[in-house]
Amino acid sequence: MPKGRELVGLPVISQDRGEELGRIQDLFYDETSGSLRACLLADGGWLRQPRVVDFTALQARGPGAFTVSGAGAVSHEPPPGTRRWQELKGLRLLNRDGRELGIVEDLVVELPSGQVKALEISTGLVNDLLEGRKEITLEGQVNWGTDTVIIG
Image (cartoon, rainbow, N blue to C red; front, side, top):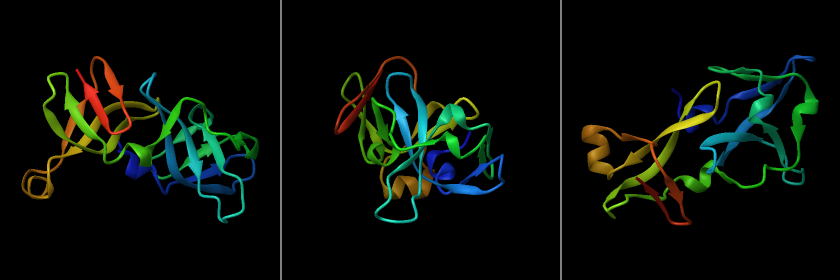
């Protein structure tokens, strides 16, 4: 299963014209459903409106590119009730007992559904180098705060 960082940078290609509409710059995560809801495309300029593609509009999903039926799949509004992938990185991860498990570094995503199955966490630079980062499966209730994620 790919991680969020592996999806960022992939092109989104229009099937009707065969042209690249943009590259994924960020992902929108829905905390309620536990899945990706949309992708933010790199806009190519600082005066342009954001370009968003709903995750369900992606017809072919990776590993090297995503496709959509046409340019009509692009909107300018992010889905309500979502958080950007970049905002989730760096949150502290705690269990219900208050024990700190690590720092959220990435999301582990099941394709083609977009369901987030696990969080990749860091337990410190030395541990990351010696043991590698850990993946914590998202089971049960997950509470997303502004600074902390609590799983249980």
